[in-house]
Image (cartoon, rainbow, N blue to C red; front, side):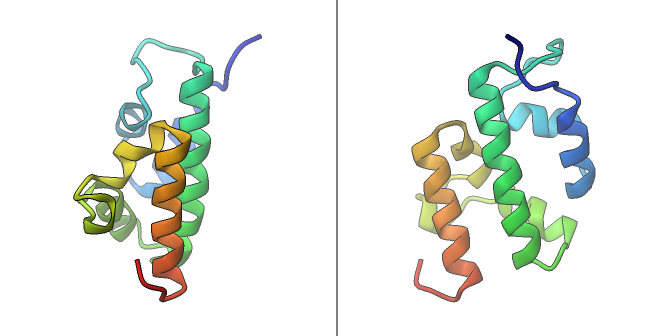
Length: 107
């Protein structure tokens, strides 16, 4: 059984206005891969779900979305949100912080 096609990173990258290699790097995909491993696919799905919420929060502003994903975040221990998406637990923490921002709750 194969994983998700790596080409899916291209669509997400287009939504963010960045290169697909950047998205692939965020989730740990090797440049020569054609299919994602299960762990990479999970990270990709977490990133995709997060970007859906993020685009709503920043009103589809690509620059603001990318800046939020790549800037150290105080609520996340001064770690860049994209870096935490490789594990389920950390990914949920990032998602929780973003939802708090969206709904104006304390972070």
